[in-house]
Image 1: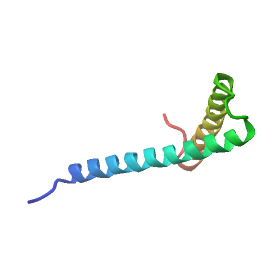
Image 2: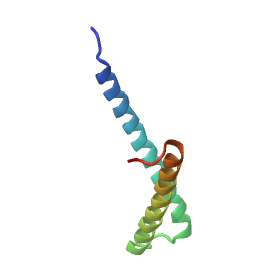
Image 3: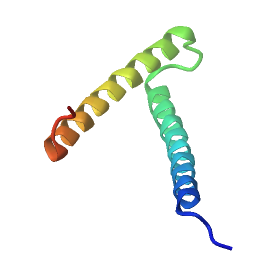
Length: 78
């Protein structure tokens, strides 16, 4: 039985996404635990807001940096 290359490509893409989600979950736990060191337990909604803002700012910085790197390596998209 022959497996079409499109199926193999789809399976590779799905496996990549699955491992990406696992990695994201692991990083989320690590970052949450790291921030918890600096915040007292039971800080509540304000602590979670601070966590969300910090993570959002870091995500924006990383995405902008990766975008600049991609433009430098492959040129701007037209």
